[in-house]
Image (cartoon, rainbow, N blue to C red; front, side, top):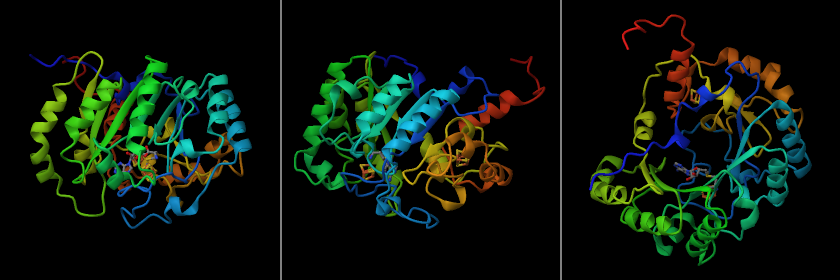
Length: 347
Ligand SMILES: C[S@@+](CC[C@H](N)C(=O)[O-])C[C@H]1O[C@@H](n2cnc3c(N)ncnc32)[C@H](O)[C@@H]1O
Ligand code: SF4
Ligand code: SF4
């Protein structure tokens, strides 16, 4: 049987065409409510010193955005026409003490919500299930490997995550709940097991991605070993379930020259760290030299229009940026903005 072809528009790098490019403010802001976490993942990118250039490890700082400021930020976003917010980390967004109040405030202002979470904690199913999407970082097909990789501090954590997935998909079948699986040597034999389990629980997709790691993982050999299992996973694709293997992350992460001159992505999708600083993108998060100003000291609008961000923009040289997985969005936007591109009639 041939695999049905399905476009997965949710993750398209071309979504920007649906927005006014002259808009002064972002479409989407990602926020780390806290740098605290209920887990201690073996290769958490916010615990490792990946490139030796980060000024500090955010999870050591135990930072948290104060609730009052968070709620006033939601009001500012609504006034500025910001359409969507993703809660992520730095840490685990759902351990933020008043996360329910923040989520309700976003819903009240009709700001669309996405959440990136480990989901290994008791949750408010009714509230969370009204999000547009939730991406669960699972990375395992069994409790044993979950314990090794996530170091959750509770013996039933994997079972709890699966149960939460089931509760959320049952509460709202429209919820786009997907699962992230960072492929690592400790879980490489569990790809199929994980896909089968989450599909049965109503997840919409599973996405396999290599982990960025400071210990040398030989990914080319690892990918040779898992090739057949990935094909088995893909055989689970149907109208309700998709399987991604994020190959282009390998390409993007390989040291690749940029084929564009400016980063458009940072204008439409910036981040706010648990330290209150606004950052241009997730790759530059928690680097002091890329901090654009603090929402703990100013309004978001003041930071956005402020001199600190303007001078960062003046100095922005994409060739100095780290390898980045937003290349396709930037290449596409630069092409769209090109005056008189060559040979347009030879379609
Ligand atoms: C740092 S986590 C924060 C949110 C939440 N605590 C979680 O784990 O989903 C955000 C995303 O980074 C991913 N991530 C963490 N460590 C990574 C690594 N070493 N390489 C690639 N992605 C990583 C996680 O899988 C998750 O999708
Ligand atoms: S759950 Fe998320 S933030 Fe916490 S240690 Fe794991 S990857 Fe890092
Ligand atoms: S790392 Fe990528 S997304 Fe971030 S500013 Fe540079 S080009 Fe833009």
